[in-house]
Image (tube, rainbow, N blue to C red; front, side):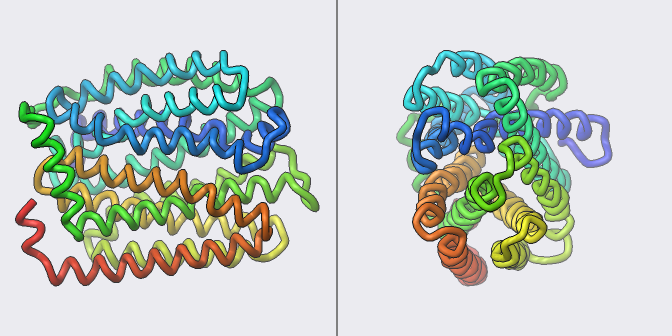
Length: 400
């Protein structure tokens, strides 16, 4: 198997990080544009939120079908199909003439992105040693944050300067180049064993994962964590372009540089698991992120930046640990298990947007503070439940 400190590990982990980077570039290209798109299409913040929510929700709904297919044809093939679809869908998006058609095109992009996201960690779980797996997952999620930064900043600056169509075309061409590089670098699978069972067998595997509380609670943690993280950034973007700040969209998109702290903490999560429990790390991440929300209460741009730095640090730390937890604890159908985690993760991101943006529109930032605090309490309660389940039902893991 692929072990740390080898040339094959460096090549494989770099290829997977490139794919991860590309997914999040495409997924969040439109997030900084939302205030601009609200003006362009004369729509409310809640309606234009569909440009992000449609992609993340379609991604969530497509993960399990991609994962089930990968159990038969292999992880690498699915990842390559997914990467090649991204530039094609991106170019088709340019022809959308209304907010509805653009939202549909973004949903199609979510379906394309889901293939790589659904099986990348399963590929690592099968091809990497346990030590290499946790380090690789941390690096993979760090690449998520870098891709989110690059996609959002490029979307903000290109759309304000040249229009949203140019931003989409540039991203499509970039996606094609990266997809070809990943195809060249990613090693073939050696330990994958195809499953030729009936669809009914695959569905039983999905239900078995969902019935295991040690896995399902971690999936819920991922969903609530992401509902807070990604949508607090969206609301902060609306907050900055509104009075009294009136920051241009291009400069407001620079807040996504705060993701860099998440890049660091995602990588550190692998080191944390070598000495401490994953669940305690999830609690720590939730508390750090909650502190960021409360710091951002103050009406000053420096306070907002500090708050976002803390939110990113804690959220990525929690996400890395929960994601790695599911990939480790699932004893069979690993691709399906990690895909189910991401279903909860991205569904939480989609639904959380409407929740927090609604609070922003009706009660301002104070309403967002209250609504966000409620979700952080729920997050900590889920971590407590996961800790108890791990100790009370160890036999569940063996039954997977």
